[in-house]
View 1 (cartoon, rainbow, N blue to C red):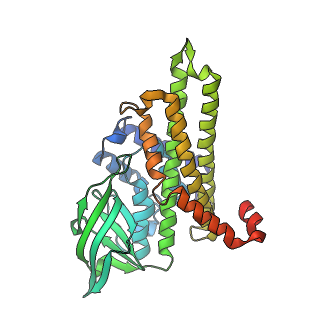
View 2 (cartoon, helix red, strand yellow):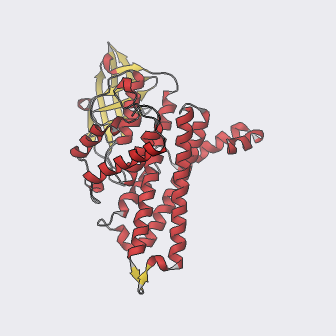
View 3 (tube, rainbow, N blue to C red):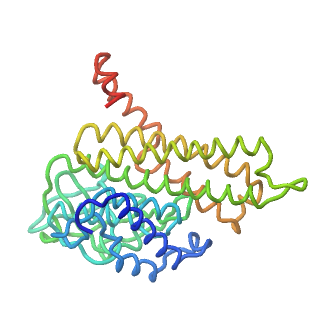
Length: 352
């Protein structure tokens, strides 16, 4: 998968992902929890390390390929930490030159209250890591503490299980251990901001996929459901809501595509990458609420039941909009970026 894929190759990648997820998941699997068979298939396909450099044991793909995989995963509501492994955990371990083990991974920034101190030949780590994605299942947790990365093994932590609104694990990890010298390394300054931007990229790609699922489910429902002798799609009021739903979904997808395109061409360290990621997260958060609202309005009460698959998409949209920073937080950052450029830089900021 090395090199940059063209549009046809990206479409083949998208279809391959969709085929794999369809093979291992039916509509209810998004609520079924961890599936070892699915994760093994994801690893064997190369999707788990899609954007990790070859020299680090990955597939050598770009952020565009990783975003394609994540968007399809979001559309299928896959219960697996693909983004946390491919874009976050493996990347951070690779940046530090640490071993990237097989299995699912995740990465977090150490909270201020985590006590990390050098001792002997390693580091003493004491405290809590709150809301770690997939913490109970991962082979390693890559913790960015200042300018060091610590690779925590499962046996080094105790788990307090937690979950987000969609039922995805968001566990609190209790840490009281000594991290050996071989399991920690220094990283370049600015790695914390790159990790933050990568976390945003993962969430917006997943959200674009989940919004597409909500739209597809709604289109299917209004074309099949009849009222007064004709499909719901034949009523003008329904058509107007479907058009609004499609517009919100398209706006999310376009903003995500624009962010990924710029990050892919110029790198996540580029200043404009911060601009477009902030804008895309604001748009995704704003769109998530509207997409979910319209989809549930058109489905009626059935869309709120556990038996219907719409909730797989909408609960993820509601959960993911607040992860990696809410739209309110990113809107404040976007505004600060505009103000920093001053009045003379506003037009260039908008047009790029």
